[in-house]
View (tube, each protein chain N blue to C red):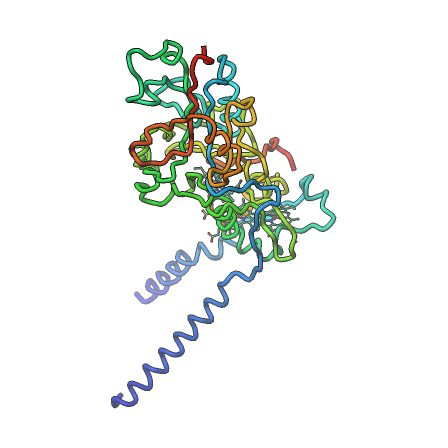
Amino acid sequence: MKMNRRDFLKLTGTGTILGLAGLGLFERVTEEAIAAQFSKDAKALNAKRWAMIVDLRKFKTEEDYRRIINACHSVHNVPDFGNPKDEIKWLWTDTYEHSFPGQEHEFMPEWLEKKPIPLLCNHCANPPCVRVCPVKATFKSPDGITQQDYHRCIGCRFCMAACPYGARSFNWRDPRPFIKKTNNEFPTRTKGVVEKCNFCTERLAKGLKPACVEESNGALIFGDLMDPDSEVRQVLRKDFTIRRKAELGTQPSVFYIIGGSENV
Amino acid sequence: MKRYVYIGIVAFIVIVTYPFWSAGKAKKPEPKLDTPEIQKLVEKKCVEPKEFMKREHMKLLNQWRDAALRDGTRVYVNSEGKEFTVSLQNTCMKCHSNKKKFCDECHNYAGVKPYCWDCHIAPKEEEGQI
């Protein structure tokens, strides 16, 4: 078959048009034909930047710690492997020296040397874990929570290396057999993903404060750091607070009132 | 000599097409809807029309996942304006509490094995429950 330049151009032109039309048609057919939308519950608690204050003065007995840790770990199906190597940490405790390195000194009060400090993810405004995550499984949500999408996590553990607070834990083993009492309303995690405190985002969506705050008898204060009238801001105006390793520039959203002799 | 060629061709066609005509024998899936939650419904309706759910439920679940986790929007307003809490465990599986006779029925047939249940807690089902 002989074809001149003009016919060739006509043919390829028509071909292209048909191809594009077909593509358009294909997209029309595969497009989801559903006019649904998503919204928030009217009861949901909203903030620009959720924050917490830990009032150490109000932690008097072992029970005060146990209550908040249990509350957190039971709603979120956090396993207890019974050994520190495999430990999954959402809410845990450590010594003052380990929690605030550089702030300790040899003349500090004995009660402070011994007193456990409640620790959790600091939901930093400038979180190193988010920066290093290669798959964007960890991200900042608009309400200031440092979130993790377990569906995306590939278990590379860069975030664990980046977090200066040890607030992230890796599931070395299947956690399910080590969950004392499973909460059927919340998923577990699985071997091979990293997990952390989520500031009870699923409770905030229903209008509930975090589980630990609810159980703390006022020792944990929760609110919007960007709202000048919020409870956290009122306390921050009145009491002296410190944050963990703030000199690293992470801008933690968890504040601590250490207090003085009222702790004894 | 030619005979062997014909026999060969017939045998070849039989073997190659075996998966197609033998598949008809596998029992078609019949997802069961007789759960307590669904029996309570006045209108036996899913979150979206049945045909859409059949075809698109995996995409819808992905949308739900992202809406809840990424956007913090945990209420789904369906095409009829009805509201549902965005949750696999607490919404889908409350109605479809017979996972084995519903989700698995189709998935076994289609040879898909969603890994969701590694984390999401499947409804408790007694063995032999209808």
